Amino acid sequence: MPFLLDRSELRDLAAKLDSGARLDEADALRLFETRDLNALAALADRANQQRNGLRASYIVNRYINYSNYCILSCQFCSFSRKKRDADGFELSIDQMVSKAREALALGITELHIVGGLHPSLPFSHYVGFLRALKALDPRLQLKCFTAIEILHLAWLARKSVRDTLIELREAGLESLTGGGAEIFRKDVRSRIAKGKESGAEYLDVHRTWHQLGGRSTCTMLYGHIESLADRVDHLRQLRELQDETRGFTGFIPLPFQPENNDIPVRTPPTGFDMLRTIAVSRLYLDNFDHITAYWVGMGLKMAQIALSHGADDIHGTIIEEHIFHMAGAKSPQMTTEKELIKAIREAGRTPVQRNTFYQPVRILDEPTAAATVASLEAGGDASSHRVEDTVSAGG
Ligand code: SF4
Image (cartoon, rainbow, N blue to C red):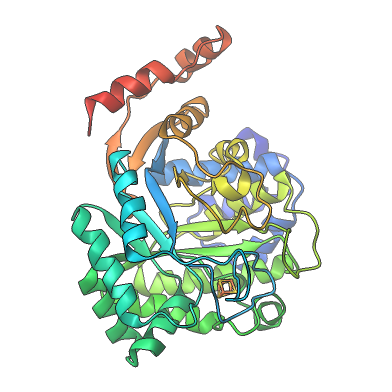
């Protein structure tokens, strides 16, 4: 047992984990409620290292939002617009192809594509852009659509969710995104995302995709009006579906951003809250391989620290982010591969470029922790020359 836990209020939970028993909901709530963040981090870091060693991953990807027009008006959403709004937008297929082509030149392996529930685009448009983007490079992985978009597309196509997913897959869809989970509990959901699909419908879309052999990520939007018990309930439902399908590749907790929406909360989650949420997720979601610290929501500095609190991934280069930034995120709209690698290295982890499914694309050289610290103390950039060496060496 890590020494930090010897006198911690969490030592019985440490012993429970040592015995191989699963944490239950009451345990997860206790973990959320503790103020002993160091002990919580020690437990979560140990659980992560048992699963992932010292590796921490990132992805070279690009976001494309095809449109922010949406027929719904979720109270928490700062992104959606109506046709009458001056800052609404929609991209043509040619514009999407152009953005993708530029990003391919930067070495992306994934396009992450979501949008609002557009009031008039036909189903053929979505199939059309998947085909056009896949035609650019068959190795480009298309991670697209939230569960509510899939329900919208099924309605447009007048097909079952299953048949809609099959058609989208034939057009090039490789993974669903995890967005749109928010908080599953009905009383919270109706106050933050009224009109959106239920938690059960979200899970059903992912279940169907998993049953077809597909993989997806999942999320939780936290730090607004939900209680800690609501978070635990949300995690429980994700863990149960994962027990059933094993189709989730990773979990991405999303810190709420408070600007330009109708939720009466004016501050984003604190650093403490972000780190404990990562840690509890790592410990409770014992059937998930990967926990992502989403740097866009947390900031890269917090995401870096999260690597010692149970996270083993800090997401990607992104290039053009709208959804969090329209809600007031203070992080930059993009980051470089070099910055991600540096953040991972300084945290004493081995950077791994991953693909959409968290599989390694390449594993970078592993500096010893001592060498990294020495380089930093000498005022050097512990990563830069090694990164360029590795990048130029290719995959
Ligand atoms: S969260 Fe999604 S479904 Fe809800 S209003 Fe925003 S874009 Fe539309």
